[in-house]
Image 1 (tube, rainbow, N blue to C red):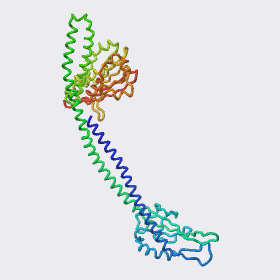
Image 2 (cartoon, rainbow, N blue to C red; image 1 turned 90 degrees about the horizontal axis):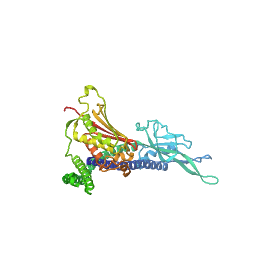
Image 3 (cartoon, rainbow, N blue to C red; image 1 turned 30 degrees about the vertical axis):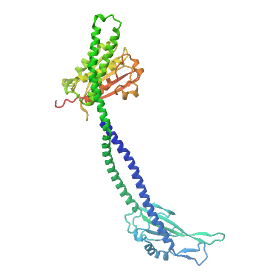
Image 4 (cartoon, rainbow, N blue to C red; image 1 turned 60 degrees about the vertical axis):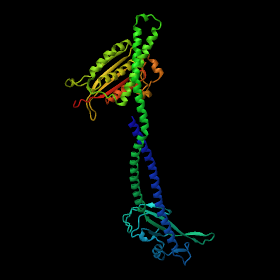
Length: 464
């Protein structure tokens, strides 16, 4: 139980840390990537400013609607030198293109024009050209571009107008963003993975340290329960013996306090059973009482059990039956044999049958069915015992809790059957015994229609 709790705590520590690290990694990646993009865009805008300042603008001699023009031969002849002086060389993977006001490419540093339409964008955009012959950037598959419209004030008749002289497009390879981004993803992935491994190990250790006081308290509580149950058995047995002796005395047969003695005897018997159940569970939890490995014939055990309960069932007008599945005659010798503790297995099925009788109204029936399940896939051969009754049933929301200690469904269900006077430990003992034998329990129930409990016990006859 404590190992499961420790495991869940460690998983929660790791899961919460993983979520926090994921958000942190996303934030770092987004910040670094945006910083790289801003850096590239700043470079492109600075190049635009440098080139725009160096443009040679000449007036036209003849009257025209376009009074100015850019002498691009003279302008771009000196741009390489200007960029070199400003710290941005053409060889540093910055490409320039000059377009006429009508969108015609007039000059370019590219040996082969790229197939990207001219789109006015002065804030920067990422494009994926189909041509890869970009001078020294043959491996480039994407570009970051800024397209700037160059304008100048032109005189007008009524107001000053802006004349478009052309378009300047500056390109920068996109891999200067993608390559560091991919490297950052790799680094963040490795760092996050190692951090999660460290957190998982630390979480396991911290969960163990946190569970130590709880484990110690639980061990002390189990020890106290075992000691108290053991010490209570003797006085309870002594009280019960004295009450029985008093009831057997013929001189007390007509005394008025005989009914009180009978009540004391009944309550003492119930208290003794409660103490025995608590002692059994305490020993089971502590692992002191491991089931002995002896050969048990489950079919013979169930036959004896049903014989013992037939009288009790008949007194309550309930039909109790046992059905054993047919088997291959060749396997008849050990078909229903298993290794375990016969006394505990008897107690397991006795609790189930007693519970079924307690919550089945008169006129109902209880069927016990035993069958052998051969090995299939990863499952070992097993013995399956089903106890099916036509009782008052269990509400769906209560089914997961019926195996908890001292759990009772509700007072109404208890009052529905006057025979139900248990302590709430019967099914807890059933689960403890089944778990000690590596078994499983399945339960299905419908209110007012009955309950079916199936116990599956592995049949490990291996090298014994």
